[in-house]
Image 1 (cartoon, rainbow, N blue to C red):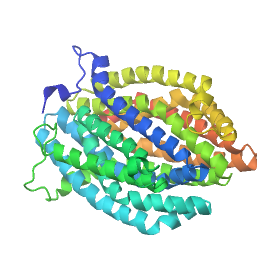
Image 2: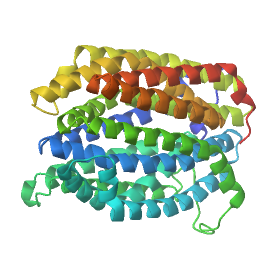
Image 3: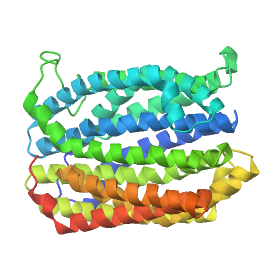
Image 4: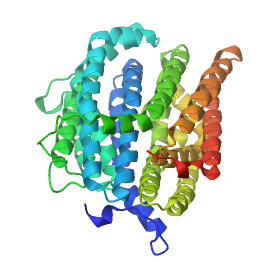
Length: 453
């Protein structure tokens, strides 16, 4: 494995350089992915509010399943980073191999559920008849691509743990370019292609994600990869490694599942306000997602830094790197808060010309601006704790906060007190503040330095 993949922080190393080396490819990758998602929503937005609502509602069960897949992703990153830090490179590659096998089984099961139970899932979430009809078609068309989406997620998690963030970036740049091109051709029927509407967006996603998953898997069998798998013995199960991956990852899967379930119910609360309100909510989330890019990229850096430095028996370097990452992240997220406060109408008008949706969505962005620094704090310190294997603490804080403050308080603000969509977004702000405060406290306490994975 190339030496420059290491993220060890000592007296001679520049902490900012290590963070930048790890974070910038992730930020670039996430930036393009977010821009692609925004362009998707803009294109679908031209088909009307029902199409926007269908896309937003349909992605909820997909996000929920990816929450479960995070058990493999986080466990894989934690173990790969530890083995990389302690120079056990073959062991790190074996972790990836076991996780790929588990991801294939997992994705086939959930792809089958999505295909056969799509109408029931969307009806459960409270979609109106037209939204359910459009969403069912979308979910069924994108089902084959889901298998490769999960595969790419796991390979990316492993490579990031090894400090190799450039390869996933390059592959995902290609995936997103293909996705946008496919949308342009298939949603509107340009250049002689069939006009498929919402289903065209799903087909473009399926094709691009499948290509990306295949490329990433091929890379891991090549000499180019920071982690090299071998065809010989590929299907051999290593129960010890599998258990270790799941031991670290299951609390994260529970965390994400509980959070996603709360969000599913939260979405149902918002969907009850009508298609216009839900479309405004969905567009607001999409516009807000631009702030996730730097926060997520720096969180990935924190995860890798903590895992590799603990593997190298250097907890001081892990702590130093995380706090430096937080300072950088807070500056960037503070800037994003100003953008949401000053330019929300301009952002929302890129999606729709509906004046009511623009007004309601712009107010949402001004509200959520208050949570940008707490959100970045949660991303970075939760990422650091996961890198250390302290996933239970993050699970408990997320489970309690999302259910108490986002869902229950949100329901009270939306319906009992009559604040509607404003109440929902206020509850989201409170949720981020609570979660960010707790993981900051947990990291400062220092128990994570003693955890074995």
